[in-house]
Image (cartoon, rainbow, N blue to C red; front, side, top):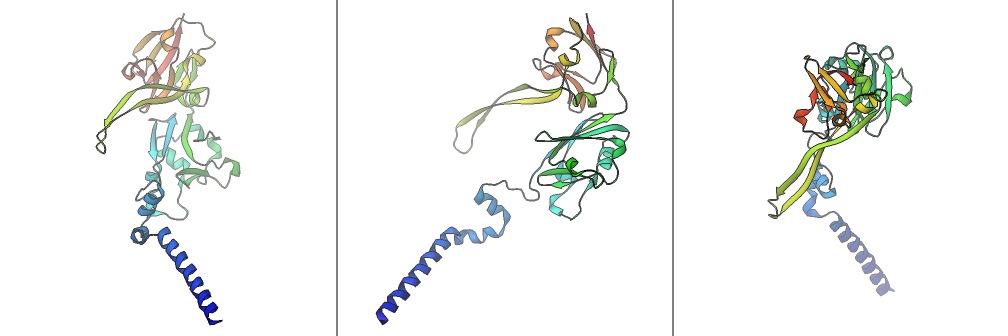
Length: 278
């Protein structure tokens, strides 16, 4: 009887030791000290490692603003200083970029969601708040369906219509809410000799620009060429075939006629008027 009890005790002890050893390897002692820091866990799990913030998302402020630009979410809400109730008024944010007297504003998310507000329905309660790696809209005066998440574009539609397209007054903000398209242009080969193995690696890169398709804006017109006037009064005349794939888009903060088949220094910046030429 005592022998059976002894064997049973040894068996149980062996199981306990086996489980302990398995756990020891699942959480290796050489990593335990390092695991006290977030960085080591990121390394072990193959995640992105950033000391102060989880992500550096960009949010663009485009349309009818003095200069179309973007900001980094971390500059707006430093994640290193997480505080409950962190927010900024949408109106205050727009005022930073010179948009104080506008008609509407549209918020768009990375996955294609969009909400549009008339100026009179925005107040100090219309807030932008931190959300995961980006920002979201929040307003207790608005229905929850408008609380858009993961905002990437803020498009301002101003009261003025300083842009003339075939005799019609409009603005870049209005055009960016219409029939938009994205063109791929520029770029080239990226060749890199790695210091790790001495091999040469090659890749291709290009640039994407999103704006209003010129052919759509002139769809009802008959023309053989277009005449473009910029804000300085300079004029340019281009044959129809050269602008077949052209778009009006914000480029480096300026309303620009993007010509995908041409180098960027031949694009026309600060566009004020486009007229079809019979």
